[in-house]
Length: 266
Image 1 (spheres, rainbow, N blue to C red):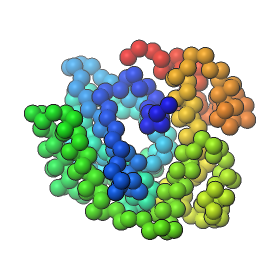
Image 2: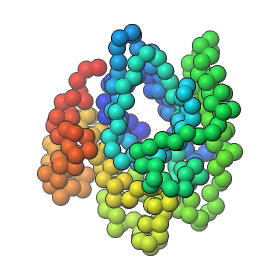
Image 3: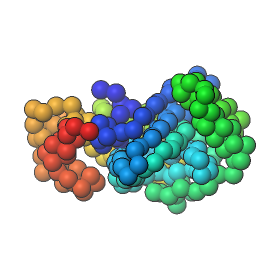
Image 4: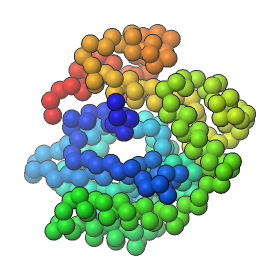
């Protein structure tokens, strides 16, 4: 399954949604770029629910540019009328450049002073005579160039590179416990804690738990027959009850209830 769909709880309800891989020069800075666009009939709305991986985003919207800190909970946004956003899902080495205290920005967004970038993106996304594919590609290129000039390259063996390696491990389904990480990263638990505080703003345990629940939601959407107990076991949970408790605490519904809702037609 496409890992980029993880975190989108109800994909069938999405407006137009586009994702772009970063160029090689930005692979240490950006996981991917993403652009939602919507144009809804008068009087209608579209409610989007997300369970994103606890990573930070740089977002350009008509209203301005913002840095969005690590999310710790399910989020919801109701769209109406028409609009767009052009954003970059940042890797830890880049997130730290924009905020020293990432823990203090959990579930928060702060404005970024980037008037030239904002003006460029707004002009590109508003150029209706330009084909949509070209508009979006140019907007992503503009945001990428802006990031390239502001995020220094990670030095081999330095903390930023180590933080990026930790991020990849946290996304690995084979990693189900925090005590696996020091050996895999060839570092100490103390260093692991320091990296988490400085480059993630959230604990490795929370990130592993989030990834498992994202994967669980994705698997439930994709199968009508997969037993919840079997899924809990595959995700590394001790039993069905622990998985269901975690799932409901974060998503507000049980796994079975979520599967029924996620498979409803748009």
